[in-house]
Image 1 (tube, rainbow, N blue to C red):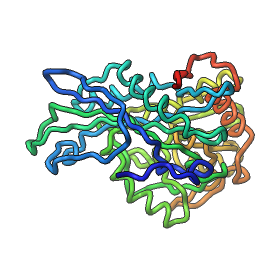
Image 2 (image 1 turned 30 degrees about the vertical axis):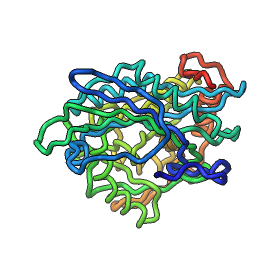
Image 3 (image 1 turned 90 degrees about the horizontal axis):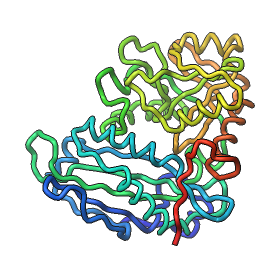
Image 4 (image 1 turned 90 degrees about the vertical axis):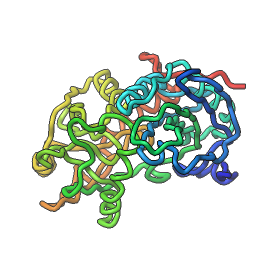
Amino acid sequence: MTALLEPTAKTSPGHGAAFTPSMYSLSYSPDRGWHDGQLLPLADLSLHPATIGLHYAQVIFEGMKAFRQPDGGVAVFRPLDNARRFNRSAARLAMPALPEQLYLDGVDQVVAADQGELSDDPDHSIYLRPLMFGTDVNLMLRPSENYRFLVMAFVAGGFFGDKVEAVSVLVSREHTRAMPGGTGDVKCAANYGPSFVAQRAAQEAGCAQVVWLDSAEHRWIEEMGGMNLFFVRGNTILTSPLTGTLLPGVTRDSLLRIAARLGYGVAETKLSVDQWRADCASGAISEVFACGTAAVVTPVGAVRDRDGDFAVGDGGMGPVTARLRRALMDVQQGRSADVDGWLHHVRTR
C-alpha cells in the first residue's frame, strides 16, 4: 500500500509524495467502451508482468492543480484544456479517446473527496495526475485493446522548495529531448525516462534543471526540463514557437494571454543559445523564467554552458516575472476576475 498524507505533510508537503486518500478508476474495452467508473481508496495496482503498457510505453498522463478559493471552495485550473491535450496524446499513441466529461468526472470525484487535505496556505494546492495505460496481457508488438484510466492526487508545495528563488540551468549539448515527427508535443511516459540522464548531469553541475535544444542544429532553445521557457526583452515577452517538438503548456498559453492583457508585447520566436548569451550580456534580455503546472513561474538566474557560463539580469526574480507570477496565481486562487473562464469549480461534499 502506498503511503498516504502524513500530518506533517499538510504544513510542508514538498512535491510528489504527499498523496491524498482517493483515486478514480475507469476501464475501457472494445466491446463495452468506457465503463466501471468508480472512486476507490488509493491502493497499489496488481498487474501481470506482460502488461503491454509496461513493455511498450503505451502510457499517457496529465498534470493540473486545484486551488482553495476565497469562499472556502476548490477550483481546478483549466482542466478541460488538459482533457483535450490528454486526447491528443492518446491519438498519438493509438489509444482510445476519453470523452471530456468522463475525464472531468474523475477529476471532480477525487477533488470532492480529498479537498479536505488541502490547507488554506496559498502556497499549497492539490496536484492531480490523470493517467491512462494499456492493460492487455500480451507481448505482441501492437497497441493494447484494453485500457485503464486513473486519477490520483497529492498535496503540493513548491516544486523547487518552499521559497521561490531563481534557479541555475545547464544547457544540454549531448542529449536531445525530442525530434520532428516524434512525441515531443504530447505528454507520454516515454518522453521522460530518457531525460533523466541529462537532468542528473545538470544536478552534478550544480544546476536545478536542464535546457533542451533542437535536435537538428543543437542551437535553438526549446524547453527547460518539462517546462516552457520565457524571455523578457524590453516590454516584450518571448517564448519558443510550438514546432511540434515541445509541449504546448497550459500555463504557457495562460501567461501569453495574461501578459498581453497586462500590456506586454508577446512573441513566439526562435532564440539561439548564442543570442541568449549575447542579449544577457548587453542587458537586452533582463529576465528569464520557466513555467509549468508544477513549477508555476520560476525565475532563471544563471546558465551553465560549454561555450561559457552567463548570468541573467541580477540573478534574481525580476519585476516582470514577479508580476506575471502574481497575476497567474491571483486567477488560480480566485483573487482576481476569471475573465477567461479558466476555473472549474468543484462541488464539495
